[in-house]
Length: 189
Ligand SMILES: [Cu+2]
Image 1 (cartoon, rainbow, N blue to C red):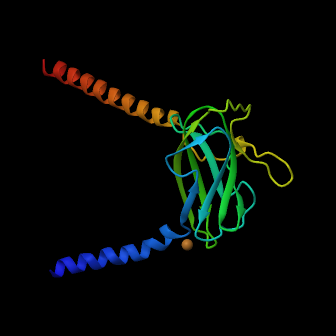
Image 2: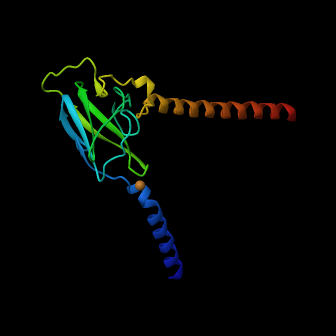
């Protein structure tokens, strides 16, 4: 009984210590909602937070990006417009399929929270765009360059790279032990 109450106490204090970092600043609503279906066109992403995010230069800190859910390929730069407790941006999407919205928010005390959610795009309107993805134009009318940013989305190729690394590692270990056992056998003869 005593053990139980001690571990409960430790658990509770850990929770109490860690929760402010987790909870600050909490996302309370999104458009599109997670798992929803959206018609092709200009999709106005709107994230609602508990509190207003920290004021930061456009394209820094407070960010929204869109990526193809299957491949992880990010479409366009990452940016967000701040207004009160909202972060917003506009996506232009025509290709039907599953997309993920990746976001990162800096709260007024410097805590960073991030997350992602997905939606499915359908195109019943034959909408086309020659520049699919996030539209990031600053107040001077300049477009953000995705090549100058760290991508919010990790592409699948990196995961494949990791898997390929594992396979090669295994091949080396197997080959190494085969060669080793052959050498040992030769010595024993
Ligand atoms: Cu905080």
